[in-house]
Image (cartoon, rainbow, N blue to C red; front, side, top):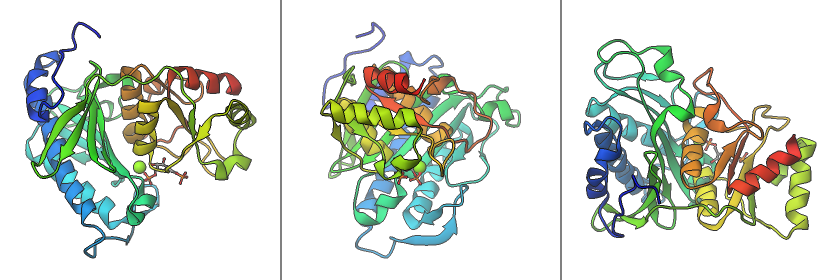
Length: 329
Ligand code: AHM
Ligand code: MG
């Protein structure tokens, strides 16, 4: 464990944990702490809506499309509203990038932070009671506080993240995040309405035997990807694919595995978005001892050129990601 990591007892409440760790932040003014609390609060509201989704008429398609031309679900839109509200109220954020909006949302010019978020990832699983997630990255703005937001504030590399995390709405709801000092996971206790530390200083096994990929598209994979999948099968690996990135990632982080969304004939740059899907998970993976690449390059070093940029994504146990890469190059 690094010296800068403060040992925290299992069971400590998220609020207290954030407070105790505040001095780890480079800019310990409390604003980043507040943003993390805002995200946690919004996630509780979203969690409540997800849990009752089958009971009231909030499931199903919205009839509208998001920035990528995909059908929006009612819960996608609801989650976007909840997180946008929570993150705009406190004034800490100057801009919000979301999967659900074409352009970034200009918030408070006095805010220090830029947030990229996928409010509800795993859309195809919403209606069928399968795990879904929220993914977020937090950046410090580059332009001076108090001035209008600039393109360089928005299009920052993953290495510039000051915090990142996800919420997994699964068999239990978890919030997992990093501020660059290791990864910690908190489980939601719904009767108390609070997250408690359940997974302290998470480490990803360096190697594993789970591979997660949509093999239905294998005919349009590059030969190297197909060869790596043959290698997995020849070595007795296990295939596990939920189709919810957060859930697939979380399982692989705990058990050891690799998640791959490669370039396909349909999606030449893969399907997943660099700014609000891949970077956050790459940061968490690396902080837990894992790795994230586009098959060749470190995800966090890719300079985004557009908000909704897609990228092939290889993430998980370090040795598995390296091995997959060796088949591609
Ligand atoms: P979404 O942002 O529209 O929900 O898409 C992202 C999701 C990931 O959660 C998941 O890993 C992937 O898309 C599944 O895609 P596919 O159905 O092509 O396998
Ligand atoms: Mg998504």
